[in-house]
Length: 78
Image (tube, rainbow, N blue to C red):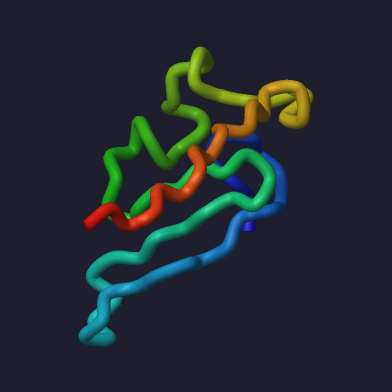
């Protein structure tokens, strides 16, 4: 499935309505980590209608990834 943000074929469905109604689905991209719902506005899920500022076409994703540091685990203080 094509990602609506980076336009690569790296997206897949990651969740759906629990009642089986298909009222909504959530998709995620393994390349740019963007996630979106099937119920989003057209300006969010249609690349032709999205603001180009928010697209990641022809961008080196690896250069954008800044790992968030995980703080050390605090020991339980009683």
